[in-house]
Amino acid sequence: MTQYGKATYNFAFRLTGNEADARDLTQDAFIRVYRAWRSFVPGTSFLSWIYRIVTNLHRDELRRRKGRYQEELPEDNAPQEFGGQRPLAVTPIDDYVERQVGEPLSKALAQLSPDQRQVVILADIEEYSYQEIADIMGCSIGTVRSRLHRARALLRRLVERAQHQER
Image 1 (cartoon, rainbow, N blue to C red):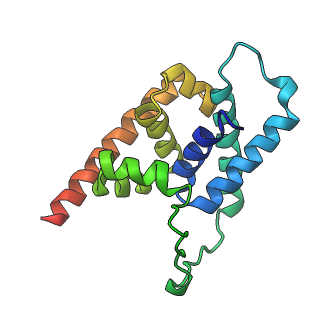
Image 2 (cartoon, rainbow, N blue to C red):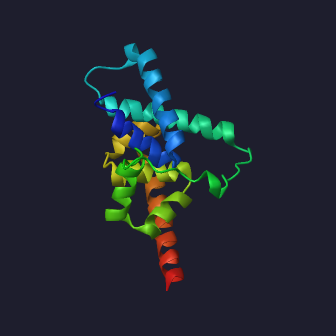
């Protein structure tokens, strides 16, 4: 948990887009790791293994939520100040977005489907190889390539559209 907790949380946050779900997903993933420790193959990437667990848990949650009405929280439930400290979600993601990605790209990323967003995160942000992404997502390398190609093309169109609207 000490070594891989932050990376796992960051990945979960990128998938879910919010702090509470990312924390739950990370916690559930480490519980699964604890229960299934005997199935881990020594010599393989632990991070790839836990990302695969996070991916499967996220997909399961999306299936459970499908068709449910998601109500927005009213403004009076805005996040409270954290006594000078920032919440865990702000530090890794928001700082990166502010420095590297920019507003149009972060909004466009949020518009991608979960599978498209995940493949872009794994390839372009986490910098995994196609084989590692295929292992994490549970699909073939060809599927990774085609999803990544389509996701990047859609991302490009969404960013261009957002930039044109700003003008």
